[in-house]
Length: 250
Image (cartoon, rainbow, N blue to C red):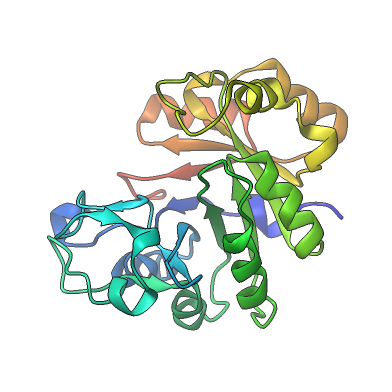
C-alpha cells in the first residue's frame, strides 16, 4: 500500500483552521468547520480517556486551554465532554464526533498521542471507529510502536511517522533512551513501514527523510509551517505542508 494521492493534494490545517483571536480554538468543532470551509485537509490529535475513548485533544492534561487540571486518562469521555474551555463554549469531541462532523467532506490526518509505554488501547479504539468511516483518513504518530500497532490492527489505514532530527530526554521524558535512539534518523523504518513522513520544517533538508522520500517514494509533509520562510522551505523540500497561523491562498 502507498500513501493516498489526497495526502499531498492540499495544505493540512494543523489542529483545524484555528484562530484564538477570533475565538476559534484548536481541535474544536469551530476549527474543523473553518477548515472544511477552506477545503483544507484537517490534522487533529487524539488522546485516551479513562474508559478507552479516543478524545480529540492535543495535551494529555487539562489546563492550557481548559478549566481544571489532571490527566485526560483519569477522566471518562462523558466527564471530558463536560470540561469548560477558556475561550469557547464548545466542548471536547470524541473521534466519532469528529467523523460525524467532517462526514468525508475533506480528508482527516489523525495524530495518535503516546506515553511510549506500549499501550495500544488508543490505536485499537481509533481502528474500531474508523472501520465504519467512509471519508479519506490517515493516521500518524511520533511513537514507532503505535505505527506497528496500526499496521497490525488496521493494515489498510494509511499511516505516517511524525519525526524530527533530535530527541532529548528533556523534551521526551516518557521515551526511554533506546526508544529515542530508534526514533532518530528513522531507524525504525523497515519495522514500521510508514506510508508517509511528517518532518519538522525547521530541520529540512535532512538525510533520513531524503532517503525514504527519494529512494522509497514515501511522501514528505513538513510541520508546522507558520512563517513565510518556513513556507518556502516546505515548498522546496517537502510535498505538502502542515500549517497554522495563516490561511494559504489569502
